Image (cartoon, rainbow, N blue to C red; front, side, top):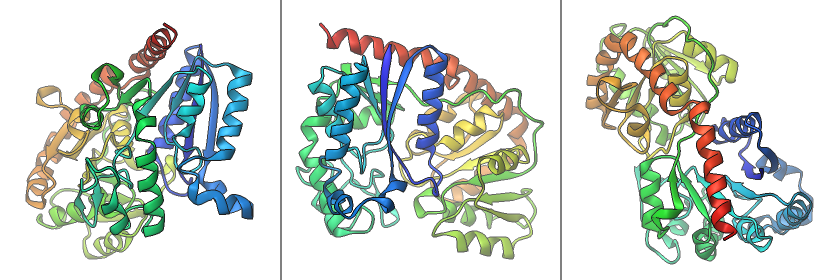
Length: 391
């Protein structure tokens, strides 16, 4: 089987779990014998576009003429069995779905966010969850609130794109919903249940976990929706040193909060932005990984990384996190409402229960998020889609 994997890569300067997942999945498919043909563009290339290319950039989310020409040539030459789309914005455009269908190639999309409806993809703005554009023909609230890149003009283009491509999205042959929450989002959008398959992302097995470290690790983009302010509010409700060490890794607009906490408390250490090797080392030094977004986060890669390396997770009960962590005696950790008091109450439980939960986290990864479990499921999705497409 031959599959084209289409993805507009996010900027490499900003850590992207989605880029990691796409690269990982390509490697896993190739190891399983699938002929993968990447069709990727990078947002890093925007700065080097010609003047003509930059002039056309505002409309590329709607159409993306150069991407359609290149994809047409690729499909004509390679004659794939399927096209697997991840992120189409801004350089590919959802029009790649129409281009694939014009060549008789069925399309599956992994849904990493809520951008069928929401211009930012997050269902989050101005510090709170927001679904103001849900059910609207045109997402005018996104324009009014400058939801896409802080620009009314770019938000207008994205809102127009979503309106124009509503029929395009509804023509996708199969959707891969990463969690039950995404499946519900797609059903609400009007996608029939028989075109939605729930299959989470996974990561390669890093091998036997290192001995448990000490304290907590929070590693994320330091932006409001990722919950750094929530975490620090909860942490300050405990005496300095009573919970062990809180390590904070990442960069972003809330970096001053992390730096100030490092100065104010002896039990908080700000590590700065870390590359993958640095994050691996920080995770090894810790006992519990904290993931406390306040938006409906879909499937945080930081949780997959924690479970695969035998580290318990303390997360907020939002988005796909309950699906990932699980409940009951086999849970990979603890869930708390995105409230400072609730999170503060969960912190000492996580510190005390880390050794037992670490074993459960590793077991849950092996049972639900291991490549040996997920890659055959993905291949079966391709096969089933292809059979139905050629009936």
